[in-house]
Image 1 (cartoon, one colour):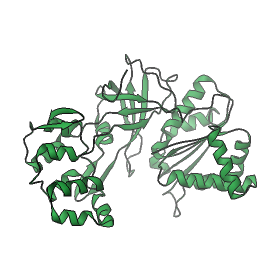
Image 2 (tube, one colour):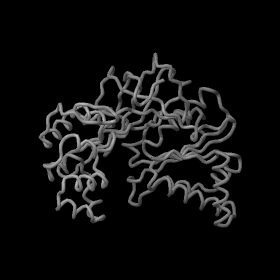
Image 3 (cartoon, rainbow, N blue to C red):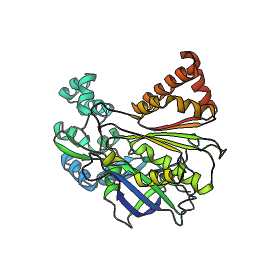
Image 4 (cartoon, rainbow, N blue to C red):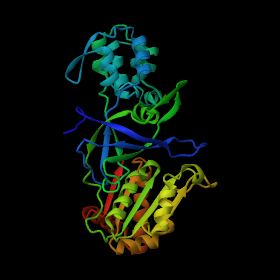
Length: 370
């Protein structure tokens, strides 16, 4: 019964930094209580976190707009005060090309309109900027509060893969959260949700709902081997997979291929993975830490190195899972898989493509990319 509009207020049990001091990334392990919610998830599912813009960001935008905080505006089919709409309903943390164009049209700003027609310059401008940057540079003198809010995109929930098994951790759901933080246009930026989650103390409430992902599931056959390929926070669902298989006594082999920046600083859940390896719950683990040597090594390179073994696992009925970046990591991994199928399976390009497609149809090749 819990949805984006009616979220469950999950209490924070643990908020722990996973990356070591000195890492260029801040990755958090959060444990949330689901007690009293009735929520029951499966490995592969996600939690949707209902966002709220930070008070200081809303205050800064209100000051730049020079509008009354109580001005009535329409957002999400409701009439709200401007402050409430900007805090809970509108995306102000990122800047899109579409918003810049709409804003230029609505304000009649000739300079901005000329700029907005240049695709390359526009893409460069919106990168690492937010709505506040635009409003400060081009005040909406001819646009009232209602008109301004109408131009904004809805504030969308953020989905995080659940990093735990409900059978192993009853009444809890764990998340692996990479905190978005960077410098842009002379200001320090933090992700709307990830930045907030990183700062939450134990006992704080997180508005969440369950997002089922039936296309990313463990094999029904507990004896089937699985190969899990993930980079960075893409490791989250695989922690859930291994917890589940250990708890249920699954006999299938488990192989993890994990990549990140540094072995010393960024090996997420290292002690757990090595513990599972020692207990033989994890059959094998191969890692790729891109910045530990002069030539960068990624998960696709590890796959290529162990192509013969991967082909043998596939011939033994293995299910392959990929979780991580959709823009670069996932396509590179797929290219590596195709090369392995061609080389070790002795297939042509077309036959290798057909083989991978058949794996997808049989649900033996599943991806959860973002």
